Length: 387
Image (cartoon, helix red, strand yellow):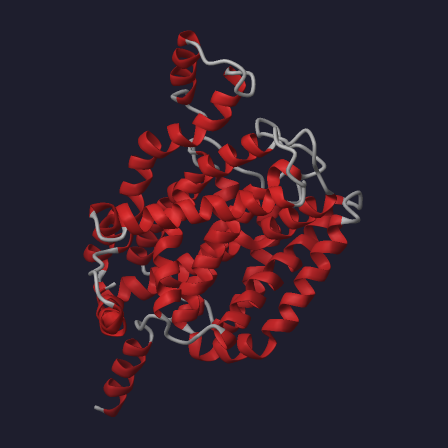
């Protein structure tokens, strides 16, 4: 009886929402906006992306590189964490329905509604010669070009997340033996390093198209699995992450900068260093948020809810701002700042007006009830327990 009670208590503890993980997931989303906002101002232009002809700085190359070193890996680790939390909270059938609503349907709808808007600003800028003319044939060409398939663009992460859910459920049904918890850190390092050897570069590039790439599935799948195990053994790992979070973050940042400024070193050294930097930054941010961003907060939960919508729609807004600001005399240092602030502000406003309490919000994060200021805490707690 005592043993059964302990198991129930452990299961209950492992299915409770963790505020710091919600906040960290939102951070991963908003860092994606930062990453796209600075792309137009790096010293090295990105192919097929707008590049400001009047302003660029190496600082944005560094910002892009550091964020790209760990952001998606962190996101997939968090996804693995919530995969297990939700799977055992509501069961397999309900989990499949839940993830279809929150991930698969937004992905499919986004292919038809979000991607044309995403492609519109740069297409219009190119066709109209930077806004110098707009004729009937221009409009026809713009409408034609925004519908050309260019891959899932920034929605690719939803596609791969769906694949990971399918793979995960298949593996669960196979009832494979579990690895000892102590082996997981070594697996995370060794697995991500070995899978990184399958890539031509020492960092992960964007993956276009809908044909799954085994090296991407293996690499990011390692982080999904690490998140699953982290949730399973959070009582063991959370205290360690809290204690050493800052040390991990500093180590990862230092190694990432060392790699950036020594990118001509031997490939095997770069991939080894990148593996250590990535894992250190992922674990470091986990530890920092677990220790210092763990209080229940309506504002943080609101931003966590909104971050999904912000990420889905921000790219077209960022491209629009970059193209518009490129033809102004605004001080260059303000451009990337505005390319972050304005798209985020517009995205948050549209989220509040057209998403949060509508059918769109229901599919993105579940039902949210309107409430006055005095009822915020009560409604927040109710919505948290239902999510």
